[in-house]
Structures are given as C-alpha cells and as structure tokens.
Length: 245
Image (cartoon, rainbow, N blue to C red; front, top):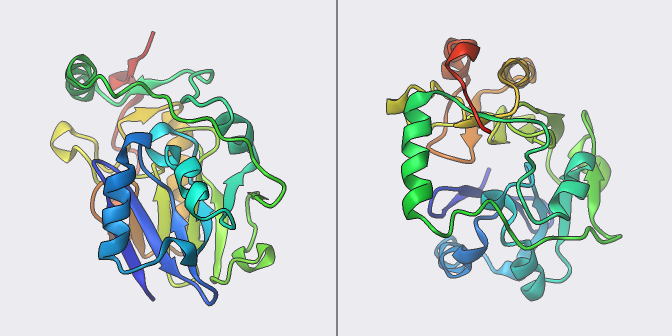
C-alpha cells in the first residue's frame, strides 16, 4: 500500500492511496503551509487528488491547516469524530477535561518551549463543519462513508476526548496522539507528552492491540511495532503526572 509521510516541524501527516484518490491523515500547525506544500510536492501528490482529510483529533498541530487545504481543494471532505466537530469550531485546544504533562522531565522541556517559542499558542483557525463533511463514530467501517480503504474507526481517548485511530485491515494503525515515538529520552515510553486521563489512554492502547494492529504510525516520531506498544502498556505512573493549573 502507498503510504507517504509528510514530516512537518513536529507532526507527521500521512497520505494513503485509496481506490479513488488519496486520503490525508492530519495537517500541521497553521504556520506550516509552505512546508506542507513542499512535502506534498516531494511526495508527488497533487493537492486536488486528495479526496478526504481525516482528523485524528482537534489540536493545533493536527488541525491547523484545514482552511488552507480547502481554499485550494474545496471538494475535500473533512472526516472527524462527533466529539471533534464542536471542538474544532473553537479554534483552540480543549482544556475542559483537565490535563497533565507526563512527568517532570517533560514538564521542564515544555516550559522551555513555552518561554522561547512564541508561536506555540495552542490555537488554530476555527473550522465549522460543512454538510459535505463526514462525522464518524466508533466501529464505523471506512467504506461505509465512501472512503475506499479497508479499515475501521476506533475511538481512542485519553490524550483528548475526540481522539480516533484509523485501523486498517492490513494491521497499519494511524493513531494521531493515541501513542507516540517522541521524547523517549524523557521517559515517555510511547505515551504522548500531554494527557487528559492516563488510565483511559492505556485502555485505548488495549483497543488498538485488540484491533489487530501490527505497525503503529504516530503523529509524532517514527513508526513502531505493536510489540513495543504492548511492552510499554502501563509503564507510566499517575503519580508522576504534572497536573496543569
């Protein structure tokens, strides 16, 4: 299967070749448009050949370029969970469910980023879903909504309430931030750096494993095997979380 990775500043976007055009999974920050276009040209994919954009969740580093994409390809259909529809319309990362950094090392590194990166605002251009967009729910088959790929939508909350994973029948799973290969030196153990609920996050891992995952394609870092996910299941502890005020 054709899988192209568009690597932006910190986010991986994925292009999957379907029977009818291409499916894009996630975008980057709103200020990464030119970098996104260069990556698309390198992949040799015309933007007008992308039929669907699947959002794994609403955060700024995954949903920032929706408006830019639609301005060049207005026939593009945005696919998101029912939870994401309202959240993406606010133009900011949701913090109503609480939240914590994974551990003190992650907290220190992100405090440095916050001090020096003025573009890191957790905001993005708000997006109002259109009637032609597709709202998906847990267990939905992709072909049932006109996406010509063999796979299933799995709701995988824990990082955010609207997180979904695209689990292809081949065993390739596109998880957004439901798992990561990022800042491993800081003890992340394949967790993303920010969580709403650690216990729920690990339950989402169990769902990914039960779905027959073989390879994990995360929103941040390199792909890795499901065996690594299984090995690290439950290794981070709730007492190490740094709760945000």
